[in-house]
Image 1: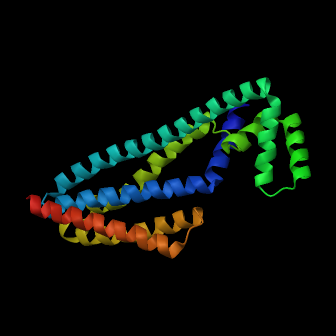
Image 2: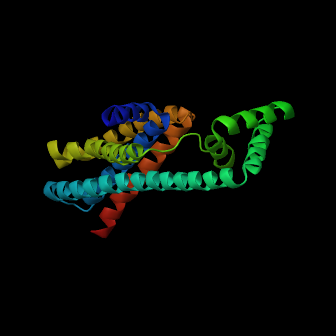
Image 3: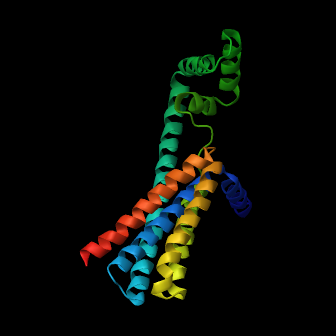
Length: 232
């Protein structure tokens, strides 16, 4: 039963547009951060060995940081939701009529007529009072599960690693004279792809998101390169 529950939650998580947007952002961070570090060290005249060591260390640290940050945020959201559940349970037990009034006003604000909102509030408070109170008082439609908390952190880390692996692989397989130009090209191409995925997942304007992401990437790697040159 536990395995089936986990597989169901995994499937739901993988199909959630919000999850895909999180992955695209984590992958973008991996691309930009690793590409910026590589070009910064290239500008400083670092050897291939130094580039690989720096980029590998930065990739591992960035992956753990990205996964940890997403896990921490999801865990905090779950904790806040559980606190809201406990709060609403107490309020429903102590002052049910007040909660029903809040649900009534919630649906009135959504555009329902007075009579219909009253009937809806009464029906919901009869069938699932906690769920109705959570939606009207906190905007919570579904609780974040413990599995979702862990999945969020793990997949964010993997997405960061996948993004960082693109410039890192070029550094590993190509000589420095060739890799710099290819790193820049790979970073830009990867940013275009991830920004398109993120924009579609978040229902945003694709063109605007691509331009914004590419500009940020270009500025980051350019500044990193010149900082490396100036520092050494």
